[in-house]
Image (cartoon, rainbow, N blue to C red):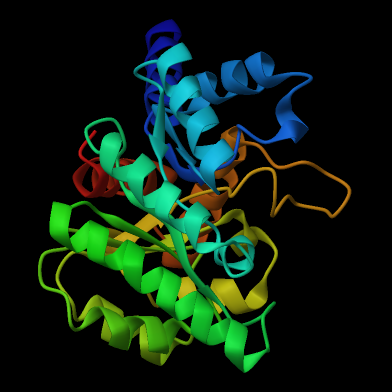
Length: 271
């Protein structure tokens, strides 16, 4: 009986260690009071955390955190479309320069993309596409994975990417588009859909990700956003909740989901 208990304990630890939060923002001010504790909790359940840059300052902070927590926190450099649409060209150029100068230190270009949910103005949407195209071209020229923020324009983004052949991996962060578009994306080699903690409470996301093969899913929290309630702050350790829900939806074990999604993340981001 004791041997069974010991074996069970070992297995439980093994399962909990096989997860990666592929998209969060622990550089944000919301984590300033207790960032160390947040990362400690993450280390109890996860093998790695990918901190996605949001703009020039956020990118610099993401890089600094990756050095402070080397081997656990990894950075990507991006420029959120809702922010970039109103930025002067000098700032966009500076973001390009920042990415190129740190290509060997970042895992991907992103998050970058287009957001037609928050932006309804046609001129600003066109500006978002113009800026996004510049980031696509960097990912294509330097053969870096592309981490996409796409909302209410997933099909348009998919069509944009058809003109580029040298982007090694494409990640649709917090995917919430249609199943029809998802299937078109999955017809493309090395294109992945990221499932956020929204899957824990959104019926739409549950219906969607039930149809997506685990072999093409990444897991994320988008911390501090997308917590279980509006009053909470999300954090990387909660990616375990998304893994549990995916296991329930696909009627397989948590172990199977955690191992496969970690394998996916390591393949996509090269960690």
